[in-house]
Length: 158
Image (tube, rainbow, N blue to C red; front, side):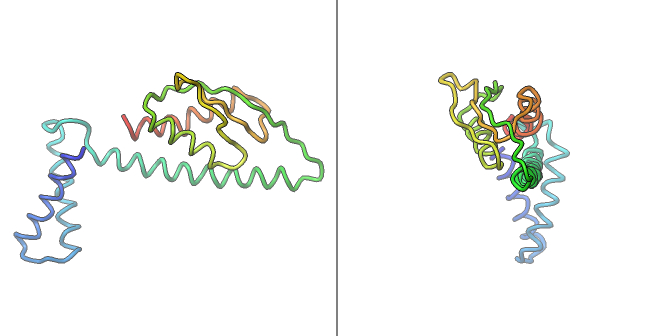
């Protein structure tokens, strides 16, 4: 990935050199043409096309923002009810993530979402213990986390 970024920057500077214009918009245009060239030559370069990971990271960011807003609305709705109808609980969520970085990112995304908190991680890094403010169905909560955050993290890192 770093090799592809370096090639893209070299292409962008080459574009600026050939045009003899040293402005930021010219760098952006050269960077764009570098992306096109790298995309066309992606099967000759090692690894996955790096811009796919950049797009996946952007999708992960917007997924987190969406879940953050939805969780805030749900917490406000639960708190403002005349009768507090919540079912707090702790559940174990098995994870397919392997590296410490991936597990830490998943834990942070879960903890930053209102109403949930990662309490502990098993010694073998395969199970996360999560406290949720309102958890009527643990299987549904596990499936939601696996289908949103965990899947998006795997798209970025693998």
